[in-house]
Each structure stands twice: as C-alpha cells, then as structure tokens.
Length: 110
Image 1 (spheres, rainbow, N blue to C red):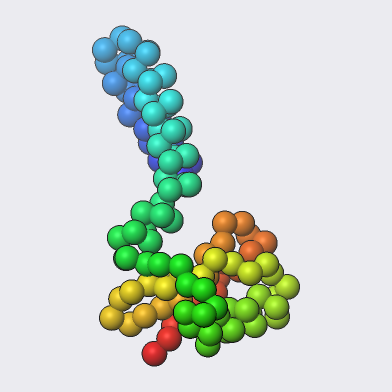
Image 2 (cartoon, rainbow, N blue to C red; image 1 turned 90 degrees about the vertical axis):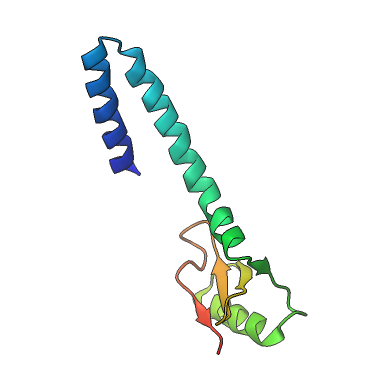
C-alpha cells in the first residue's frame, strides 16, 4: 500500500510540476489515502461477494465447525467468523481481522 501511495505521489508531483499547479498533488494524495483505506477495509467483502460465499453456523455443517473450533482451542485464538466458499471444491475460510486471531488457517474439504 505504501508503494501505491508513493507511486501516486510521484506521478501527481510530475503532473503538478508540468502544469505548475500543486493542488493536483494535494488532491491526488488525498484520493490515494482514501482509496487505500477503502481497499484495506472493504477488499475482504468484495472477494467474498465475488465468490458467492456465505457464513456458516454450527448447525449448517458441524464437522467443519468442530475442525475450526479445535484449531482455535489448540492455538488459544478467539473463534473466527467461518465462511463457506461455494466453488466446485468447497472450502471453509476462517476469517480474522487482527494478527491475534486465526489468520493462516484454511481448511479444504473434499
């Protein structure tokens, strides 16, 4: 994200220098900042919507739920939100928003 911000800043500075109007740089940096915030907080929702994923509960698939629950108990992490991706090979994706939660667990169900 920092690289994107630096790239936009360099391009905006070059365009501002060419036209002699440095408000272009200010506008571009504000736009880049809000774009980075939007992608950071909304990209997971977009990816889930594209894959037509839905959140599961324990009653939907107890075997998957127990697998995620056992992983969280073993690692001492809080229980993440579990999302089922409806693809030809269904996958359960435990989502987490912070590093303290279960981030790197991906269970593939055959």
